[in-house]
Length: 223
Image 1 (cartoon, helix red, strand yellow):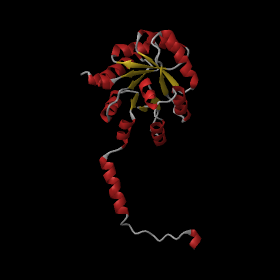
Image 2 (spheres, rainbow, N blue to C red):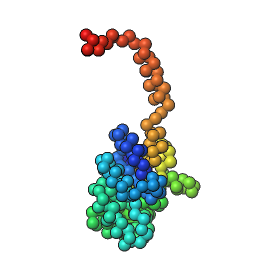
Image 3 (spheres, rainbow, N blue to C red):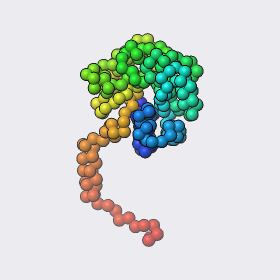
Image 4 (tube, helix red, strand yellow):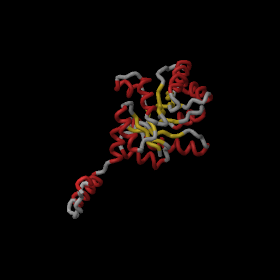
């Protein structure tokens, strides 16, 4: 399963990119607004790092507006995927953009029927928001399993991108359910790396290493 970082913060992206575990980045208007920077500048800097998949969201609500924004965003860099919302206008725009070779991440998906429609119009990614479903008393992970099953039944190439991830268990369950991608905030990705027993074990190894006799090392210049 690929791991995407859900952020527009360049420091967070660089940190995770340098670990080698990051496969992509997703952004949205809220995340970009938090940075207080020009949207296009942020996107270009993320792409310049070499990130192969960067999702940038349109803000228009009508089909023509989405098409105009989507084409503009896609032209900024080959790594950009255009995020369109799951609405009638979003479906229509996705159909046209996909036909033009522009990759679309259909976002704000909350049902398997919506995911089916996204696949039918040619979306590259579909983003079900599992955390928000959980917040409303529904089973977000059950939605992931349903979408994966439907896509396998009909061999849709659309990839399932589990979004609205709240904690590491969401990541694990999404992987077990067969999601192609999970996009998660920096705080959750950090938790995937760390475990208290790892820290304890490393501290013990280093403490024991201090007891090992070391050979006398003389700098070459002093020989």
